[in-house]
Length: 96
Length: 96
DNA sequence: ACGATAGGCAAGTGATCGCTTGCCTGTCAA
DNA sequence: TTGACAGGCAAGCGATCACTTGCCTATCGT
Image 1 (cartoon, chains in turn orange, yellow, purple, red):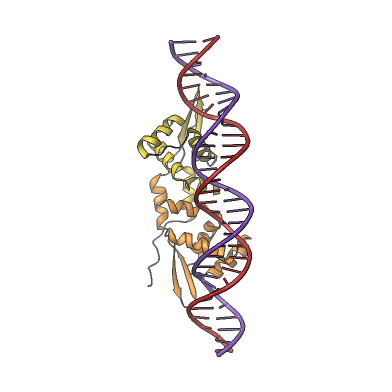
Image 2: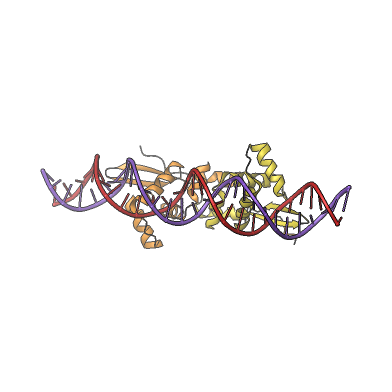
């Protein structure tokens, strides 16, 4: 569970999740070009690959080899732990 | 918003939130002893203070000076952004 | 078969992070 | 008033992190 939060701590990884929410089964190169085109980020291919590996180890992303392509798919179920641990409730009124 | 995820990336900070969910308005020393007694963690007072400062800058914790005490209170509302960004949905069935 | 495409492995680097150490400020009680 | 208590400030250190670079493997189309 600790890894899920660490994975979400990086902005590039959060954007990758955004893109995978929009469309499933995207390749590494597709995600690289989305980062560049839509978000102005130009990390190297390896950097993005490492990010996807981190996301995969937390269960937030699953991947499937199909020929020479590796298709990446989001799985949001680990996120349920986040709000389950600290349920969102109205904040205590401020005294000052 | 980026800071919220970074704040949650640390286990000690997550435990601090756990303790603040159980009881509001706790001092630095109270939280220090809870870390030691209940969780076997013995970071220095300054370390815990720095963690609380991080949580405060993200809005996850609010604090109030009362005499020589500084009382810390949780505010879970920033957590709503997490699940709002990537709504939890059933995962795509695995093909392999 | 061969070049192009999609991806992987591993070492190295600079920046950030969590934490400690030492000293200082402010508040309360005896 | 003075000592104990609660907390703050700032420099420094080691570990982790994000990223790059260089080279390698595997698959597809022509």
